[in-house]
Amino acid sequence: MAITRDDVLKALSTVTVDRGDTTLPDSGRLSQVVIDPGNRVMFSIRIDPSEAERFEPVRREAEGRVLALSGVSSVLASLTSERAPNPPAPGAAPRPPAGAPGAPPRQGNALPGVRHIVAVASGKGGVGKSTTACNLALGLSAQGLKVGLLDADIYGPSVPKLLGLSGKPRVIEGKTLEPLQAYGLKAMSIGLLIEPESAMIWRGPMVQSAITQMLRDVAWGELDVLIVDMPPGTGDAQLTMAQATPLSGAVIVSTPQDLALIDARRGVTMFRKVSVPILGVIENMATFICPNCGAASAIFGHGGARHEAERLEVPFLGEIPLTMAIRETSDAGRPVVATDPDGPQAKIYREIAQKLWANLSGAPAGRAAPKIVIE
Ligand code: ADP
Image (cartoon, rainbow, N blue to C red; front, side, top):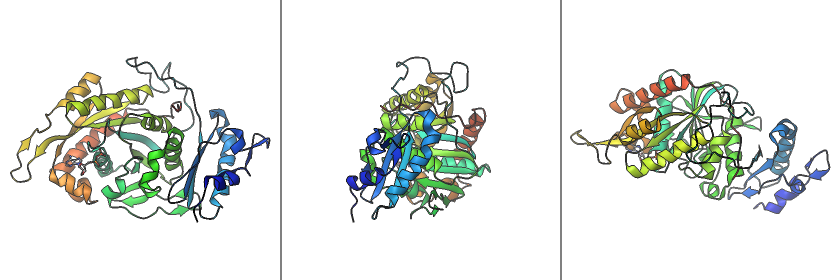
């Protein structure tokens, strides 16, 4: 039976807030309610950051009431805090890192048990961001680190395909999702939780709600690094996600072409806006390695990302060639770092992962989330 928005609002009208003075739908705190074709219900509750503790029971109650409706398959409810947008003017000096003198005050807690959360981002789609995120996670794992991979690419989740994962994650005690395991990584993907087409209608609060839930309601356990595969681009959804996630830093993946580099620059600017340190830039598809003769040719130009990283004064982490082995293994769910660990590609990813870890070890652990701004 299809569930309607009215059904959800009716269920939510049994939840009272503000000392019983009003119901959740009448309180003006409820976001738009979204129901996807799989009867998954998503909404968020607007609060002031100081009210977070008081509203957690309300969030749980609201989630429970909606989940009790017949036909609802799952509920994604979260607390969101909106602020008037106040980014620095373009070209303004980046804000100091959180915790440094003059930095915005820290808010909330980072993820317990997770030492570092690192975003892998790109200014545009198709540059190999997900492939890089996945192999980078495996490269970190090859160093003996405990690593998780969170696919937050709401517009095209590809981690299930890259790691050969399918099926729904198991729910533990009715409230926590168990991450899937692949090649020694703990993995969770938005693609395992929602119908792909439903994400297209998401706005700031929904995006934030999804990422918050995937961080908080997944049993990540103890991790040295959680790699977050971000949605490509630098729009509102990406900015919201960068703000909603307590990131230690971000890695930008770019191809060497000028256009991709312009987009990569926007990516660097976006993270700087929200005081997230840039841990480095990676040039993907730097050279084409001919599968027949092994010769390398720079079909997209070469070295552009290294040059751009220098210009932007951010670390350059390395170059990954365009090879059949990388394309075939990632498209077959058998990532090259795990399935050909002694091969030349795995070596490149491992070296980049080592540099990343070195840069990360110098970064503050578990930086608290910066202020949330919903456009
Ligand atoms: P994005 O996440 O940026 O959209 P993907 O990681 O999904 O990009 O990669 C897009 C396509 O490019 C995939 O088919 C993938 O296998 C391929 N690809 C990515 N990096 C490489 C590489 N270094 N060599 C060959 N193919 C690659």
